[in-house]
Image (cartoon, rainbow, N blue to C red; front, side, top):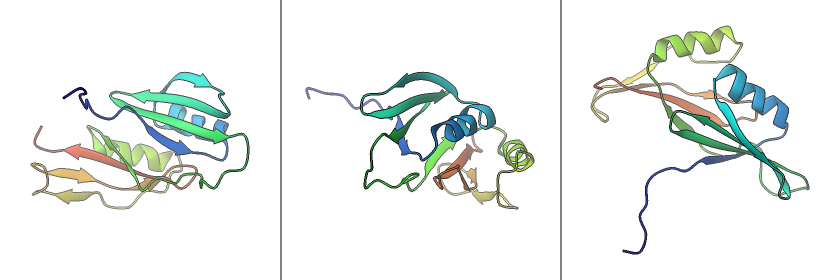
Length: 128
């Protein structure tokens, strides 16, 4: 084969307010802003471990809806502590963390929303 698929490069998220979104991902979730560009839309690239996000704020009207992604799963360690931290930061989180013992050797998860309604899923492997 002439090519090789290596895994996820980044997940693009359309945002309404870049400063608000950068604050959320950088200051609340601990991502690092690694690059910015303005090739027709304002782009900010964020990184946390092996998770890469591209925040996109169009300069002109677009049919794309801010936050238009079903969800982004982010692997975590210490999911209970993350849930408590997010709640302390004013992020609406569920009371209970999900537990699926038969999925991928056992996982814990929950969903919450980012500033533009994007669904985020902290995902912790319990067998690792």
